[in-house]
Structure formats: C-alpha cells, structure tokens
Amino acid sequence: RINGCVPVVLFQFSAFQLPPCQLINQTVSLEKEGCPSCHPVETTICSGHCITKDPVIKIPFSNVYQHVCTYRDLYYKTFELPDCPPGVDPIVTYPVALNCHCGRCAMDTSDCTFESLQPDFCMNDIPFYY
View (cartoon, one colour):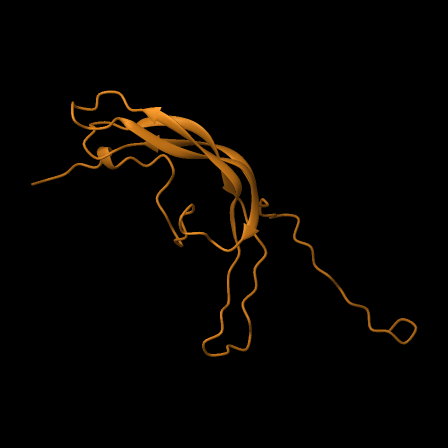
C-alpha cells in the first residue's frame, strides 16, 4: 500500500505487438469463370488487429459483435483479363481501400470467415481430376 492505495500494475506487451488496423499493399489474383488463367495485381487492402471483447456473462439472444479491420472507404478498379475465350466477358473489378477502421464485418465487401484463402490464391492453380 502506498498512502492507503493499492498500486495497480498494468502490463504492456512490447515484445510481441500486433499490427493495428491499417492500409497495406497486397497482391491479389484476379480470375473469372471461363477464363484460363489468373492475373496478379497490386492493390491496397485493410489488414491488422482490432481490440475486441467477449462478455463473461452470456445473455441469450443478445447481439455481440466482434470488430474486424475493414474498409471505411473504397473504390473499384476494372481490369481486362487476357486470354479469355470469345463469349466470356474479360472485365473484372476489384476493391482498392482508401482507409480502414475497426468495425462490424460487412459481408458485402469483406471476407468475414475465421480463416480464409490468401488474397493471391488462384483457383486455376488447383488441379481438377475428372
């Protein structure tokens, strides 16, 4: 006790600090059904960790949302895939993040799964056996 008060010790983990939610440059693979190959492009995405809570007392039917690193603002670029056969539209769009924040996962613009495929994953690289 110091002057009648109990000191509180706060621990700060500096040896292993997780990167905050931020913009990063990332190579993503663009592909489209009917086109034979993928094409890598460089874009900006949101990546990093967000502080989140898990309540000790669980209340039935209550909504608990885990915050994820997601887009605050973005726009879409278009790209024309080479080598698409006639009759297949070669145009694809992909997001370019302008800034990020920690918020609820919006399934229309983000991958909200626990473990997802890497951004540069290409389905055409997987052998398919008949």
